[in-house]
Structure formats: C-alpha cells, structure tokens
Image (cartoon, rainbow, N blue to C red):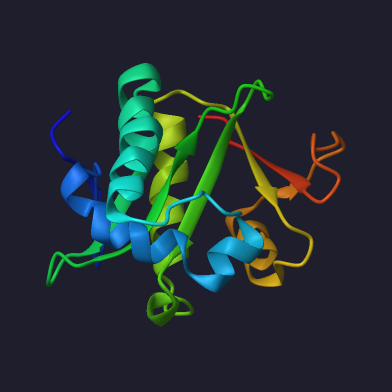
Length: 171
C-alpha cells in the first residue's frame, strides 16, 4: 500500500511519516487531546518522532493499520488523525480520531471516520469495531452514535472510559 489509504470528498487519508512530527507535537499537546485522550509524554519534536516510530509506524508494520494522517485535499495540510488501533487488552479493533481545534465541527471527523469504517469492513474484513471514549466527551459520543455505534454491554478496562461498538451490515 502506498502512502494514501483513501480519499473522500474533501480529504486525503495517508500514512504518517517522521516528517509529520511538528503536526503530531501540536495535536497531542492540544488541551482537549490531553483531557479526553491522554498525555502521550510528547514534549519535544524528538518525542513526537518517537511517538510516530513506536505508535503509528510500528502499527502499520505489525497490524497493517493504525492511525493515519487526515489532510485537506486542496492543500495537503494535516488537520487530524483517524484510524484503526489494535489494543492488547481487547479482541476487537478500536477506531480512533483526533483533530486540531480549528478543524473540529466541520464534519471532517465524520468524513474520515466513515472512510475508516468502510476500510475496516471492506479491506480488513472486520465485522465489529469498538470505540473507547471518555464519558465527558459529549462531542465524540455524539459522533459515535452518528456512525451507528451503540454502548457495549462489555465494560472498558478503565473505569473512566465507556466502550461502544459498531457492527458492519451484512453484505
């Protein structure tokens, strides 16, 4: 697979590279990222490169998927991440997404997340995808519901997290 995973009406979803470290540094240090997703310990550009090397890049090699960069087709500017994550404590794959503040509320997370769910079903043959979300993150919970996720009967391993699940429509 080359760098581009998918294109949508407005977006290009592509592999992240070490050259994306400045974007990662900004994204993972955004106050909402820290509040709702967590502190990734990225304090320098070198830390951002290590995050990329040990996170998305390693996941591409190990699992064939991970967090991809979401860029505007018109400019190529990275505005967020969206992807499929394999977490050791869960059998099912987790969808994840995060966007820079100035690109929230414009439908980009829904557009890229819809592409991720299509890829999950069509490319990776996943029948179920989970999502882990902070109960305080109303915007993310609303987006998950818009995708068709429902609250899972299973409990998340973290008491401060709610588990949602999406089941692909039969073909």
